[in-house]
Length: 429
Length: 128
Ligand SMILES: [Zn+2]
Image (cartoon, rainbow over all chains, first blue to last red; front, side, top):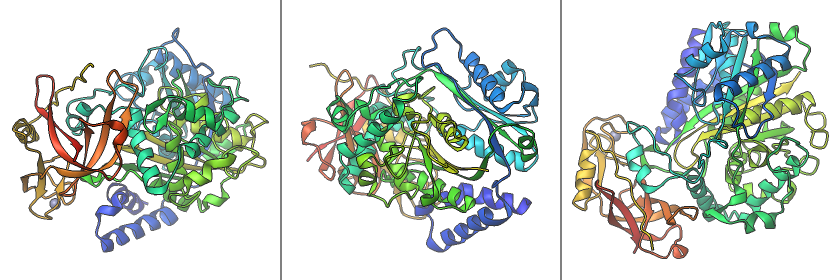
């Protein structure tokens, strides 16, 4: 066990940067990673998602951020059939006000034996599910609560179009901030490169929004419930070329929470059993100047999750794919292996992502593109909709038949500079 | 036409030679004496091998556009870009003094400097 832990740590910090390693060493490390995933250390079947709650609000000027966290925690615990006193592990990310988890743990008045405030932007909550499963597998906790909440909409935040000043000690800041990087133009550069390299078109990207809107029409809580056409997307104004306004996600207040539990706890609960069978995480940056915008960290986190779960992309019945922008979806679909690199444009076109129509039903809640992007962090809602699908609790119009295997994928941070990718594979038991 | 205001970069002891050179119209790269690779943005330790003996090297100022995006939703529209330098590294920058509609990936560009608000000059690029 201890050996396995150290192997995993080694791989996590070194083998992630494959292109920079010499071949022999990379092969050696890859074999260590494979052994770690395949044998001694796995979270496969060690934990279940027992509770999931998406806050119904999309605009909450009358609530505090801490209050939203608490309302989400309460909702997820009620969904699981557990109480506040059952929680012995807590996970939160940068949206939690205060120092790491400390203020919210105190506000919620939790008595814990495990905390984790891993911050990888919008993908944090998928990482938290994996880390909760790891902690549960090691006996560090048995009921883990994960919360997310924020109010960027009522606070009037220019989420995507204003450069965000950061801490001057952030090493990249002085070399980037003066040039006006925004969320939209940094993702737009990925789209521009993808179009150049693979011939991807704006019409193909638009199909991703079209599919999301087809799903959102059935979600009474969705911010955008109007079905849109490819034409609507490409005729909407350019925000940052080549991305249009309708290539972008919504800005919403709200939040969500998840409860991850040990098998012994799950046994006593009266909810459908959603088992965590595979997880992968991978940060990606600029490689010291070897910038490559054609792939995301999903090309590393995905294979790790599939290897652990022992399944293939073709086995996945439903996928939640982080959709800050249409291009984000397209790149992750390729990187996860649902199609080959460069074929994403053709893959997403013609309704292939629409439930009941295409091969890969995605984001059946309407996703970040149409439903909800609470706190500008879409990872939480990705897991929640995957849980709904596996439980058979999605809206009947979008519920995937016999949905036994689902994937949730998140990227957080900024795709065009540095981001964290996380992949989860979940199974209905 | 209004002019886009550029915020001044905040240098630190690790990076001040880069910004001092920029004031003199020179773009510096960091090159590792152990693995001989140049990198960007500049660090005290080589990001490829952790070598701690690095040299500053003046870049030729020639490069090509790796990717770009024209930000339309801004008080003054601007073009952000990644430019791959002749020496190897790719850097985040702006493309200036041109018709944005003419920009293409692969286009060759050359170095220019633009003044920031009360701070150092910023290395940017313009089509050749
Ligand atoms: Zn070196």
